[in-house]
Length: 489
Image (cartoon, rainbow, N blue to C red):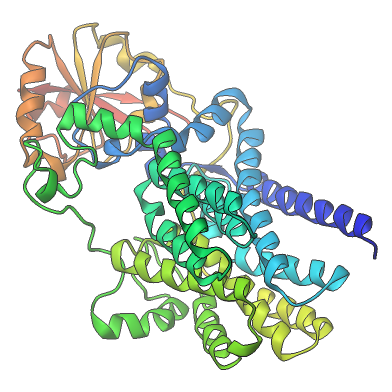
């Protein structure tokens, strides 16, 4: 197989990876996950329609809205089936980068390398996190694509690739702080490579700063101007915003606790008992990763520097992620690299032909044994959201609408509520802070206050006021029905 033929086959396989992801996404029902209904659509809509309503007593509100813009644009412009297929195709881009990284580190050539790298990508794609995000509004798979493209650049010689790798890592962190573990992992991978280490490190750091300035600086400035902290409400023991307690806000529901937790986590993932999401998740490939890493340590003399860099990236990113977050969808860069490292070991211990066969068997077994957290889905309609506006006919221009944070509902509001109506999302984690006083002051001038909610209990009643459930009107939509109720302050 000559170079031209190899290049054409590489492009063809990459296209197939995207098409497979797009086709699978199109065959699923329409994504209607919790976060999408609460802020994945609402915050980009606000950004494109005059800015944000403050205060907003909901944690998702403090996240940069830019990562959700692709989803917002796709479902706004395209018919639902095509929009979801496009979301799947975007996830396929991360699979392409995974295959390209495998092609850089696997000791094979020509058609065997193409087959092995494709197997590595497929073994990454059957992971619980990737499968659960395929064709959804979650942005983590897009951020994984940025971070892994940066890793691919790091594997190349020269300071310019390192500079652009830093740009991608910094941009990913600016878009979402959950990318930080794998930005740190990218830096660790760069330090493994011996060539021009100091110069490449300087280029990466400069690029990372520039990438963050491109995507995150504007949002940090907005948070500082609004809440007196560029990372509000996080690390408030350091920034001391008056709007939140002097504490380091963290979610302790996920991740690992204690030495036993660290040692047992791969086994717990294989059993489906690890705390990585609210729903059960099972993925035996993390046990395969442990076995692969042990094998690479034993065979370290046969491991190339780029392969070692990929291993260090995966271990470092996974370790920091587990220590800080523990939510499985934030670990997608490492999850995709599992396939690369497992196939690498198979290639080192046997022939390329046998490694191809074994990797396909392992991929099939992992796909059958893995259990992903399926996103909530609903039947497709003519539009992504079809909302009956009748219930909002009672809302006046000087009214205020509250959204009960435990019933995701903001998707009902864009283009429906009268212009000028203020909307605030209320969640219990923030009703015990001074933001509640800010909200109370904001409600004083309203003619009437309404809440979009489900049936009792509510996070608005009694924290903000009393809901008059006897005067509620049903809000009907193609996704989920809610109630519009008056609030007595």
